[in-house]
Length: 259
Ligand code: MG
Ligand code: MG
Image 1 (cartoon, rainbow, N blue to C red):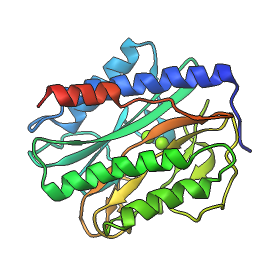
Image 2 (image 1 turned 120 degrees about the horizontal axis):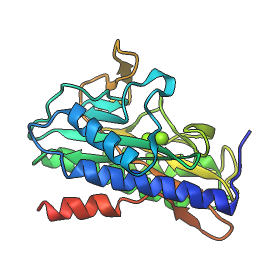
Image 3 (image 1 turned 60 degrees about the vertical axis):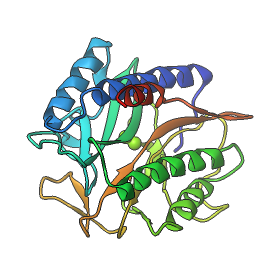
Image 4 (image 1 turned 90 degrees about the vertical axis):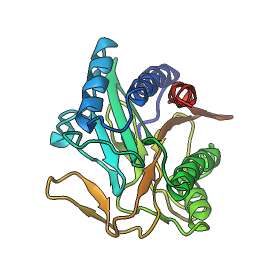
């Protein structure tokens, strides 16, 4: 069953989503060669708790950390730890918070120092595909319209869309109905109606779409070892427009100040 949100609930979801953006901006300040992924997780957890919220990922299905930190060929669900970031890495950071009973969930992919032009393009185009998906997410259209736009855009570059993991509804729980695949056919799937709040999160691979899971039960990697990028926004479908509840603004301010 899909839970459509009231205006009050959407405002609470916005607050949680914005805290995720602020947390990711705080993480962004510390991403550089030589830092461990575990130290980023510590920074995020402290920041979230300082803002009277709790990390939504920690303990979710047994996940041991506040962030998913996914480096290079890791698509998503990387467990932060001893891994040291190196110049030229790309690192996807996914963050969830629970505040006032509502979950925020958003992700951004960062370059560690200078990445190759090929990787930079993968990042830019994956982010662009997210916004194209959001543009298609308006009341009256269907979930398949979102996936179609994302897939249609990225496949022209020879990239592939991960099929095994998808976006999702979000609310009091991290993962609600409906599933929001990043591939699909126009005019298919669940109809988008006012009050629907979903996370759109394209996971786009430079090579094959095929992925494997590590023995840790979490880490998802590309089968060919090529890099993958991941961006995620939470959005609310309204009668006449669609609102992005999360924000990359503070993250991108930090990134600009680093140049
Ligand atoms: Mg996420
Ligand atoms: Mg998500």
